[in-house]
Image (cartoon, rainbow, N blue to C red):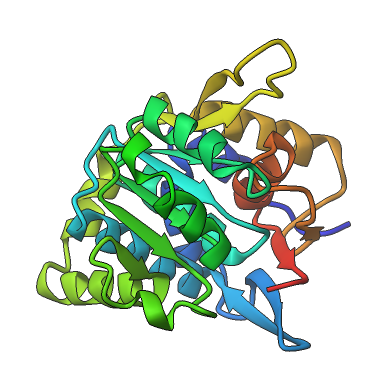
Length: 269
């Protein structure tokens, strides 16, 4: 039987937000306990809970420096990569809401949803997703910045002021953290379990996809039910393979795995 998060910790989690749970794990779990494992150029690399929390913090502060405020919606158009988790939790740490959209969607489909949710910032996977949005900028007048993760093919886009790489975002966040070391903690502590954390698109089989609103508490409750009913424990592995826009991987990545301190595995990073 694997070691599990204690009953006392689970009870405490019910009063927290998801990024607050992450911060708690970073203080209580050992440095050799992996939160994320990702494969890059054929080599598996691990990220412990301390590094995970720091990356979410710097992502959040980078978003804040770009103008992201409490109550804002962050669009995410990503494949199964760790930056998807960093981005979603970062938005939630600032009191915002994450909305993961289908990477396979057309530009017009994506921009229609981004305009509906009034997204000011969006994190995308690569040049393909950047091009979809740039081709439809007139349909999303409120969008201020596009943050891209994969820099492949992006050299000729450097002069576009609407674009910033995820690496640059982390650097911006790190500098803000140095200048205002208590800022992230203050923002993080303002959140409650009743805050809306996710907008989840429905299938759209009867018309335009609807956006279900789920709170931190919804995901924490789902995570607890899964962890209580299985033998899974700290360090158990979840392989992230279903689209991040589906509730399945979001439920596991930011529900079951996070509350139970499992390890998220990304095989195609």
